[in-house]
Image 1 (spheres, rainbow, N blue to C red):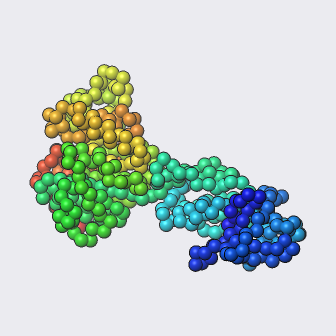
Image 2: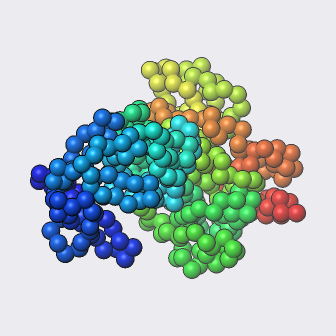
Length: 425
């Protein structure tokens, strides 16, 4: 690798034991020699007729051979000897991209360094689904995004590429009596066994780690982390997930503890990595109406109707009728701001409505105001019901949500258990 110094560049190589040696050479010699103790030679760096770079020392050019050796020569460089640049930092990033799970947003293909390739005088770096041409120009360069799971690749020959690191997280919030923990255990177990999800899971709980884990079968403990709930209103705990250092995850999926996952969930989570928006499941059938033409009744209060002045400007927005029991997102900064707003608005909301309808109206109200809601990704993926036969006759809807109103853990658990056992049979 080359290190820029005053007057030129040092050429440095890394040995297998982690030590470094610099190129040293006498001006009259054509041999290449490296040393860890002698003063490095300063090479001049220039251009080439083949859109690359050249290194010279003592009036002679550095030339390379197909067997990996190199020397200095006064002869002109051949086309196949044309040298190209890539920063050491960028090269190291490409080497680790596969293991870290980076994907190209356009192709949705995994980024994986394959090899360097010569084509006539040009040099390419092959990375799976696409290649980068290397030259004397400053590309490709990795540029950090707003969050640690997002970045960009700037290149001298291609348009900017958006890339994402796929490192998903699923989280549940559980509080109260044993029945709620038993429901959570069934939800988590279905996520692992039927949903085939192997990534990290956070359980936000009001009991300690050992007691919480005691409700779960041992085969689902792996990658399951128990985090302590705050002392505030547990009903809004799902919106405080950012207190638990989730900045290295994306996408993030919240699920209520009364949901059984009946089949592979990985595909829908991965799609969210490449799509903008805050993904919600619309509980009502049909397309969303504008607020101003929606039929206003007591049922609509479950989605925030009583919070909205429909005759105002807000009436021109869609009335989502979305559940707060399924939330999927990859834009963490925007979602963090929205969740903080949900908690603030919740404190301003009449307690009677919160006790009756829960947090869901507040989420719908704030999500409407952000205008970042997407309902297409989760469309037809969930089903609200209290009947096992109904769920089993709609197997394509793999997020099976036991719907009986706020709470009702004692009534929901037997239904969840029957549904779980039926799927296991």
